[in-house]
Length: 96
Length: 91
Image (tube, rainbow over all chains, first blue to last red; front, side, top):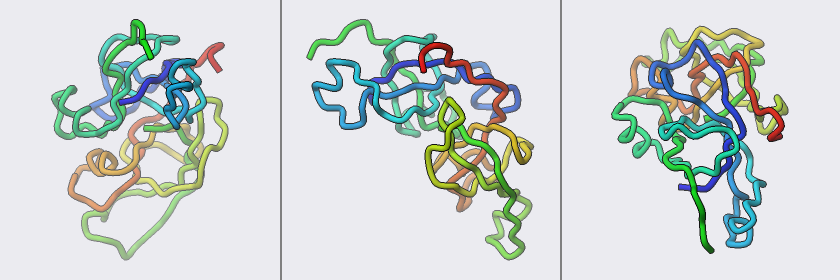
């Protein structure tokens, strides 16, 4: 799992069934090297990608993103969901 | 999962049996601003998108899961057509 910031929603009408009923967000990870310094400063240097929401996150939130397909499918309780990034938590605070 | 734009069509007659009837597009990966962020890739089409559409695509094992036959040699698939991306002031 990684830390990322929610940038905003992607609106899509025609999409895979597994994506329906949930928000899809553009998220930008805290810099790819995930060094303590980068994490401490929320250094958002990583390339953005899309993540499905499972915790009612919103734009501006710092979130925990799971980037492993099988665990995403377990949470969604859908063995065939073509999902490999899921927001699984909203960060209240972190101490490093 | 990522954003991208369909920039071309790939036609292949001789292919693996499980890919028969599957349409392939050339997709340009893009970021939320619509800027190109990587090399072109070939992705299987699953949502009736067309050339020029901005799309949601997925790579690796998850791409095959988007197909009707999920045990198929596909590592890139288009799983949604983008209506809009709203990143407001964040970018």
